[in-house]
Image 1: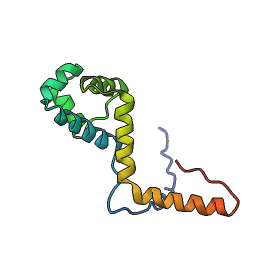
Image 2: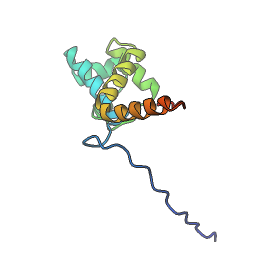
Image 3: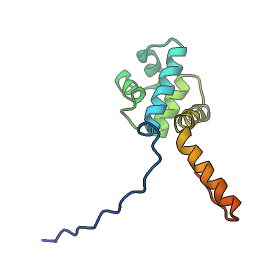
Image 4: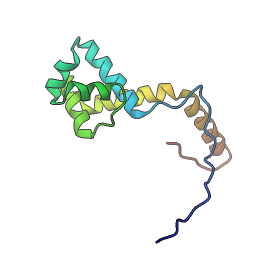
Amino acid sequence: MADLISFPRTPRPDRPKSGGPEPLWRQMLGDQLRRRRHEREETLTETAEKAGVSPQYLSEVERGLKEPSSEMIAAIAGALDTSLIELTSAVADDLRSAAVPASAAVSVSAAVSVSRGSFALAA
């Protein structure tokens, strides 16, 4: 029987505190999908039928409980008469808005690095 090897845990670097946990992609995607569905005044069932998914699945995606595949996201986006790129851009914009304090900290440290003669890339 093999012995279990235990490795010491490496502490994670501190992340900037922004008043709560950073939102997850799937949560922001769900919010964006629900917003678009409500703007169209459609029920879960109507949109789900157009997308070829169950209303329960669409509900779980909208609530951020499911991590849908790119194919599922594209199908739901199509059912809402939007493109994958438009939907993805909107979610990215929402994420940027929610993470302003963290991104501002990165921008400041990048500016300091550049002013000292080195270059820093920020994701």
